[in-house]
Length: 308
Image 1 (cartoon, helix red, strand yellow):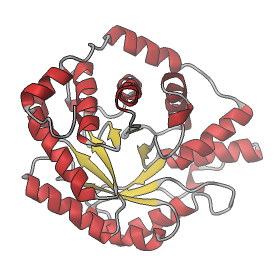
Image 2: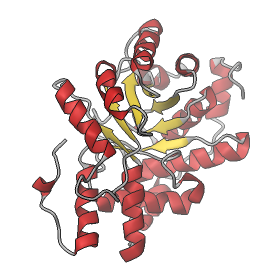
Image 3: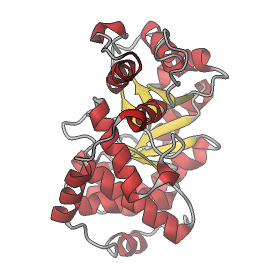
């Protein structure tokens, strides 16, 4: 299906023609993969890869220019005492804070991501969503994290959701578009698979689990379904799409479970920050603590690194 085939009937035929998700099977596979352990040299490489995959995020009403500036500096040099520590993938902020992040990160290779389209609810007219997107891009963002209209999706108005993603993607130009499905509000695993395919068919560069603003955010079973979706979508269309779990991923152990999930589900092609990201704030500190332990043989205290 192409971006011109936007009728709800056509989209319904596509989405409801997808194979149903075996709830017991997907949860059992995710749980089994979550028990895998990674040791020594492999663990050190996994930690550095996870750091490189982090979208270091602050999305609070109390965000200040000082906080965002400090966060951006940390994104560049996560451990100032160890220059071998890699930078993160991106800093993710509200549109009003994009100029601050962009000024610190200019020329560094660390991306500036901004939530847009009436984040986190998605409850705004399309012209407001497009203005929100264009403002963030004009301020210096090179990645946009948009939210879908979950109400429209759950009501079966797939064409509205599809058309909004197409319009935002067009507004993005060369900037990457991450489409947030807010999987905790979709109700079923089948809906997660359908929303993933809907977003990819509409032109998403990434599909993202969550805003981090609802009680149920990223989970291994949901991410497994999304990884299977991007794998199958590439096999059908020839286009590769990234995946970003966000919300609730706080420890190195958690991050490594996701890396195992990628390796066992879609393989090396997605084991790269270009195709997989962690939306997180507190995760980075735990990765840094574990990295210090592997390097020095002892843990740095939690107050050794800045709190974000």
